[in-house]
Amino acid sequence: MPIDLNSWKLTLDVEDPEDKRKPLEILPPQLLKFLHPHFIKTEAGITFKAECGGKTTRGSKYPRSELRELTGDKLSGWQMNQGTHEMIWTCAVTHLPKVKSQVVVGQIHDGDDDVIEIRHTDNYVEVIHDDKHYGKLITGYKLGDTYTASISVRNGIIYIFSGKTTIAVSTAQKAKNCYFKLGCYVQSNPTKGDDPKDYGEVRLYALRVVHTK
Image (cartoon, rainbow, N blue to C red; front, side, top):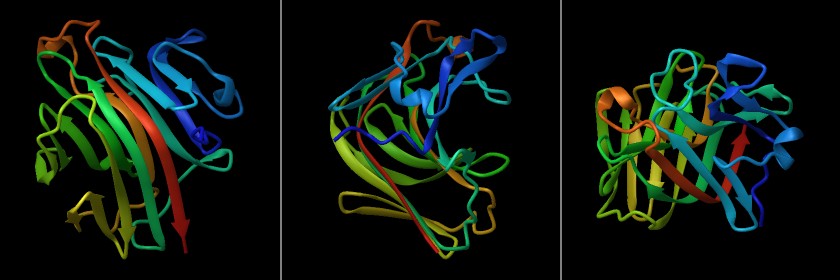
């Protein structure tokens, strides 16, 4: 079943042709028919690609080809300690930059900064925020391995699941104006030693978000 993109905004690692100071962003309904080499849609899913030398968003030093959650035609903004919020996805990381081999697949972001990130590093998948490491979600990961994971927020606590592993994070209970992000947020750039054309690549096969009051 094709992934429903009606509740997502896409940010790509390429310049907006109408404003070269910014990365290209695409909203529904244009997103439903949008095609690009860094955002390839098929019946099987979506392939995201972000180059190390790509265009970055304001305040970020790393490029991304990534979806950002919407509510209707507006940017989402839910509260960490109100209701329940869950994102479930199935994906595979198929390429990492050679030098700094890291890519973030999923995030919770608030009005100011990321709250939690699911990051692929070499042969494992970990849960992080800045310099805090909350644990490894998957070990022995090989490029191309497909897995299902979820981020669930209940009573201000974030639970990250994959297989039999659960990691709980309670340091962001008061975060406001939160939203989910998913895609390929490469964690390198040429200053880290990677070629500008080297890249991260993520294949997304399923995606679902559920909010309850």
